[in-house]
Image 1: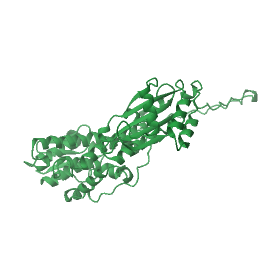
Image 2 (image 1 turned 60 degrees about the vertical axis):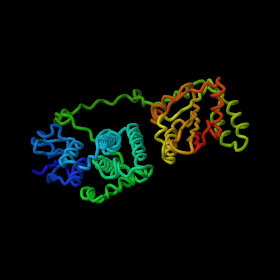
Image 3 (image 1 turned 135 degrees about the horizontal axis):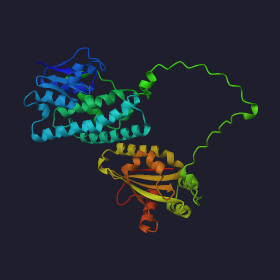
Length: 417
């Protein structure tokens, strides 16, 4: 008996089993005329999967759901299948990358794509967090693929099939060329796989999306109360007009709430004056700009903070690291009125270190920055003690872009002002 797969023709989760079947020589029949939202709501389907999700595989032993489990079953249907590697370690690594493909790639693509299509409410902070998490996964994948053609060994395995199918939704739905160009080894890997004959037979001609879809409104579900016909209302009696002297008062628009930092006591340090001095000093920087900074600095109105990136071991590609820091500075734009920052990318070869110095209004990192800029949690933060001459000198060196810095060359230095 052929295995029967219940899913629509465009379901990327069904593609996993179908491609595995092509490589394994296992017969899997895709049901005809499957209609999502109809076929998966029938009593017959719900007996196979009570929550109505697809795909579902009918086997001689009974039904099976969850796409990775189905793909594993199809692969195991062939004895000694090379899709599962040639050793116990190969098997473990294949399982490792299957988990990675599901948790780090697929989950975050869904969190980006689903809300934009109106499947759930779109929340910009949640989308930014999903994109950040996806990029982190892609950086790790890109690093691995820099020296590997396939995920495990020297040929296609089940891990490659599942990873490619998960990437497929990203490439064709939300991940534009501008986005994926940060991960050249992932691009090479994806286009190599989707052009393999067994992939092409199932996926057809794959085209990368040109744009991220616009946010679509989620249609609110109609409640039972709202669905009931409303009783006819009796016509209201006309009320006598109120005397002109009793006119309703028009509510004045409420003033925009002030940023808490604007309510702090005035500071002797004028941030814009420091930024102008920094920008206009072209020579004798230590004697002019650095001395000017310490003359202006108000430790009661401002605070200084060192930051260190938590995941420097992932900074293996120079331009990806530079883009990562550049993106952080763009997202800090909301704090431009209240902050000045220097970010140093350090090292002549990977992994590169990222360290920063930030000047913030007030004695703590502003809460609205922590809430709105998700990059903040990617760094370890330490308040500068300016009574410590070593820390004070380190601040001066970071403002100055001193090289070498702490014994290492600078790959680049970026300023937020």
